[in-house]
Image (cartoon, rainbow, N blue to C red; front, side):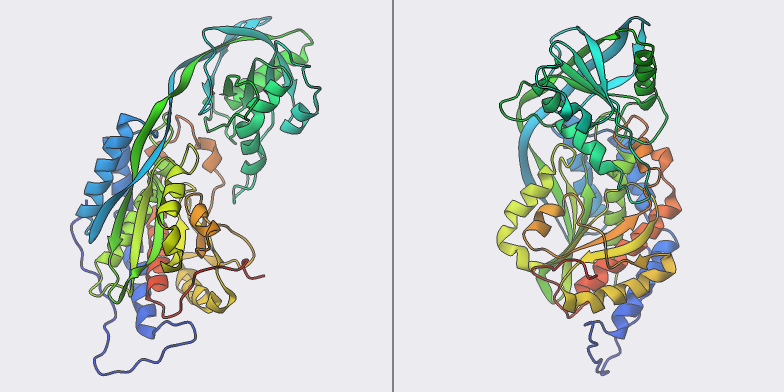
Length: 468
């Protein structure tokens, strides 16, 4: 880590009575936030943190020994960064393991296929060979007659649309989550889908799926984008195409792991908190750099800068490294359950979980009377190229369960144009991250967390819809 650098902040002038503005923020608070912003832009520890996580721990899937090492890593990192309090919160869940997987075309054009099992998939019980039937979308699969795929493998070749805000993810992620049960309802013995991704690399994208109760649990896998095109081209030739799947995967009992939490204690309202964070777990194919080592690093570094101030903000700033987001927001739900009686103590929550692209917009779900605070925060963020968006956004994945209980949320929207080129693949590695982009994000999270924690206006407890 870099050595400690004292920050230069505007000092409170003794004997000077500062009037509280309509947004609940003194001029001194704004000056302090500007200093935080500028200090982060000169260079933060975020890149060093994510480099440490990906190098010393690497992939850290929920339920793995690597996640246990990541928990120890996060505790030590919080302490080294100067957080006042570091603690663990238990999260218990069923453990799914990927042991081996392969696929190939048997006929009429024998060759290997690059695929990966989807999280939660059952195994094939050895090599499974069957003819493939192609569908252009999940809706097309749903439209097939029940039983019409008896003994066949469903192949859903639904493409993802590239978008800066990631809006193309929803339809294809629904396919990934629910496609297996839809295919089983039609009689299929397995399903393969086109990877949920926007790349053209021969690297498949994994991700979690779910089985519907009362429906057969068939194996589910994702083909790399080029392999989905390859299989589609074979089928265009009008001959039956048979493939072999060999997947060894499944659930192996349950395990308790932990959210790792670091705090900068508030000076006058320590029981009230501003939450920022990312998820500590990752999938097992890459090293979890952009999903979500970057988010953990950004929010840790933002908290570190706030902790270096001569005077802490009024409220506590809580940074959470959430457990097992990838397999169902399990750390987020555990936090919400533990804090359900203290929702009104949560000022606002924000999560960094969309890679390492620069932030371009501030969005929020807060009561109308607190929008002046958001607008003042936006003014401090404007030199970073961040605009205020009053019409969109939503809470981050692990923030969602608390937001559903009434916690106000903010979103610092990142440029995700290339995020789904790497998401959930072996290509999720450190080389995809630019250190200066991380610094811009640290600056934004530090400003947001500090001013939300310092404002005399209470954001909570129940937000309205984003202001139109």
